[in-house]
Amino acid sequence: MVYFLCFIIFSIGLYCILVKRNLIKIIIGLIIIEYSVNLVFILFGYRFAGRAPILAAGQTIKNMVDPLPQALVLTAIVIGLATTALLIAIAMRIYDRYKTFDITEIRRLKG
Image (cartoon, rainbow, N blue to C red):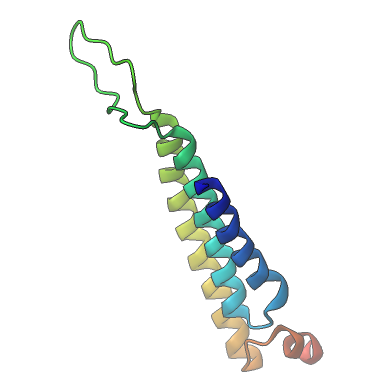
């Protein structure tokens, strides 16, 4: 059920990318897709009533949460923030040049 909700969030982001003509809305759709994928990775490592993977001397944990997806998502968040900042900077430069965020208008004004 939760994976289906992640798919719905992914579909909303994909809709924004494919249908919208505003550059800012396309960037927001890309961000939504990124966070839905991050949520799926976090859910892969989740265990019901799981414990943190912190071991003491001579102790074993039977139901441990997998820390690898958490580390991957943390890295993906940092990379996603950098790419989002780059996309916004490019969108600002496009707006300075063409005075619009509409991609059909930008294509028409290309020259």
